[in-house]
Picture (cartoon, rainbow, N blue to C red):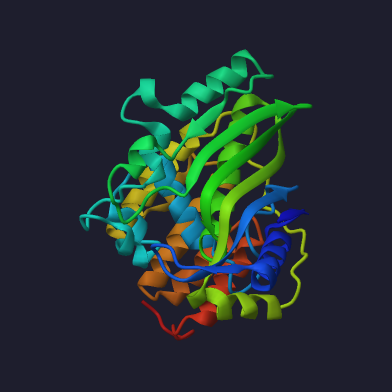
Length: 326
């Protein structure tokens, strides 16, 4: 399978179609699925990372999972706030063994892979050694409910652009793929801004690209929504390092997750890009409390108008009364 497209929806459309037509049935640990082995996907515009369809337009959970990575956390309660079924991947009901955050950022500066590869690219822009390792040899020594599907992430600077290639041993096309591409291309753009270069193409290389039997009907429904070739993209991140802004976002996310509310003054120091991300986190919290009035107010505060589509779609799918006032 080789697919090169401009947007996430163009990729998903072609991936689902190919698996449904050519997939071979296999029965691994997590259930029966149909699989295409050996997939190479190229996203030409990594900023077109959010699906515009009703079924796969999962902005809230995608942002939540990405921030879980950036926090360096392996705590189950963090990711369950955005993806409630994640308890299925926990060995002890408290942590997730395969969490990417600790593997990317480590427990000390000496083990922070992000900082290490950034330094390599700064000292030698032509290097081929800027590789992050996620899957580890220890992951096959014991049995765990969750072992990383991602093996490595490689970054190269070519022609003034930061390209990224991710190699995965396995990828769930319906649930996992949209979230993976979102998080990985966000990281790609963060590093591009840090390095002062443009964002290049994103390459997604997969051993087992599969579709579980339980998701076949949903994949077909996605295809029936129509071919989504809308070249909608997220706004550009501001120039320069994003980490100070991200640190503020992570603190606000934690407050929202624990207390469900923050004050406007808490994010005065955020630029418009990251302020919009916090507004989406606030909206997610208000969905949990079914506060429609606050959802509609916060929606109007979003600077990037395309985010409003995700809020409106979720309101349509929810059972919250439009007249409810909390």
